Length: 409
Image: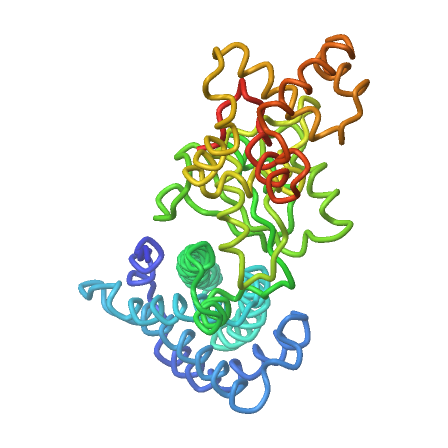
C-alpha cells in the first residue's frame, strides 16, 4: 500500500479556528449518518446492504475517517503529518479488500466515496461558513478534504486489486492441483474436495484434448470457461513438453462435433468423453494416440481417437502383438522375404475383404488370377487354419497393420 503525504503535509499548515474545529467534531456523528444514508440511496450495490450492524459499522468508519482528517488539519507544523493518516489508510485498504471478498466491484466503492465526499463537504462547508472562517481558508479546507478522500479511495483501490490478485492466484493454484489430480486418477472424494476448493462446478463429462501450446490461447478463447488446462510446469506425464492438455466439460454427444469444429486446423488429438472423475482414462487414450504417431486427417480435423480404436487397442501391448504376428506368420518364415511379404499382404487383404477376389485384386493392384494363385499357395502353407475361426482371429489381429508398416510400439 502506497502512503500519500502531499495533502497531509499541507494540511499541517492550515490554521483552523478551534471553535470551528469543535463544531465540526460535534457534527461528525450526524454527518456520518447522513453520508451512509446518501450512499444507500444513490449507489445500487449498497441499497439493502448497509442495514443493522453493518450500517452502524460503516457509519462509525466514516466518522473515524472524518475525525482523522480533522486531526490532520489541527496538528502543529512540527508534528509528523503522516502519523494519524496511517490507520486511516490501513482501514481504507482493508475496506477495499473486504469489498473484493464480498464480490462487489471497485466501481461501487468509488461511487460511495464520491457520494461520501459530496455529502461530507456539504455538511462541513455549512459549519465552516457559519463559524465565520475566511473564504481563502474555506477553499483550502475543501481542497485538502477532497485530496484526503482521494488518498483513502486510492488505498481502497489498492486493497481491492491486491485481494482480487491474491484470490486469483489462489484459485489458479487450486485449479492446477485439481487438473493434476484428474490426470493422475485420484479418488472421487479427493476430486470432489479439490473441485469445491477451486470453485469449479463438476460437469457430467470431461473430454481430454492434446494440442500444441502455440495453438492453446486461440482454442481456449472458444471453449467453455470452465475448461481446465495443464500449465507447462505441472508435473504430469505429458507426452511432449510442447503439447498442452485441456479438459473440456460436457463436450459429449452432439457437442463433440462442435468441439471438433473449434479444434479444426490446430493439430489436436481428441480423446473420449468420460465421466469427469474418470478423466485419467481419457487422458491415457489421447496420450497413446499421440505416441503411436497416428496420422492427423488431411482436412485439418482433429485426430479423433474414437475413429482409431482398433489401432489403440492393438498398440496397448506391442510385445504381445509382435509375438502374435510372428506365430501367425510362421508358415511364411521359410520363404524369401519378398515372397513372404507379397503373400502376407494378399492374406491381409483377403481377410479384410472377406475373400472377395475382385476386391482383393483392386486393393493390391493385381489381376484376379494373381490373387487366385497366391491364395492357392497360402492354402498349401496354412491348410485348415484358414477356415479355423481361432486361427482366422489371430491372423486378422496379426495383420491389422500392413506388412510394410511395423506394428505399433
